[in-house]
Length: 332
Image 1 (cartoon, rainbow, N blue to C red):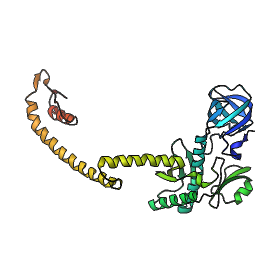
Image 2: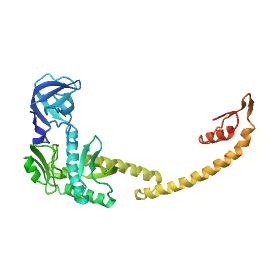
Image 3: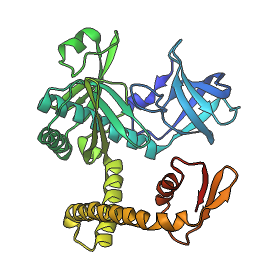
Image 4: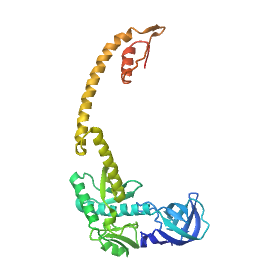
């Protein structure tokens, strides 16, 4: 059984190990090590990336048959003694998002009574699915406030293993789905959950937690959120868009929504006026176009080209000119 170094020290970025088996996974070379700092995909968290003796690790998976951790490689590895290096930026991002998820899920439970039923950490977004629907805006704000207060309090986060019987007595946020030894992740005086993922040591490392979207999915609600560096990058992008919009509208950033509403109202009135003018143009243009119809064996032919005319008018003109008669009408 591979020793899982990421459980002992999730901050470990470099390690040495011995290859215990050379194998394949989906046609790619793969190895099993006696110890590894690479986290395999599982529990809603993606796998780590990095290198073994300089060879890129493309995927890390836990084999269902025996729990072996497969390190899928870009090319075959020949040596038995290896040096592994973790993609730290990716690992720390996952640690921020996963610890942030524990905090946010507990905040939802305390504020709204909603339990988290699933969790997914993607390349760009992170989601949790809650077992309730219909959250008012003020409840979402309260959840966000509580979660970020726990972050700024910089509470300790620690892990430990307990037997299933003891886990039942600990008051976990969600009961574990497995038997035997259970790994517990605890945010001091706030959250206690069964989890095999990688986490930061203190909540302050999570950084800001921001809810960005809520979607109803049947009897559940999907909450999309961002933590740490992801939240900062999202804010930076949205702030840039806001400032560009304010510049285009020649208003202060606080007045952008009102300026957009004014533009929408003006556009609605302009479209009404344009529609009326187009109807007037149709009535004036039809007699002139009728005079340009040339006789044909089947009826008539009309070909006409405008240097400028909204293309949306052409089908309306064509229908009016060909309606109820054998006539070929070509307008452009």
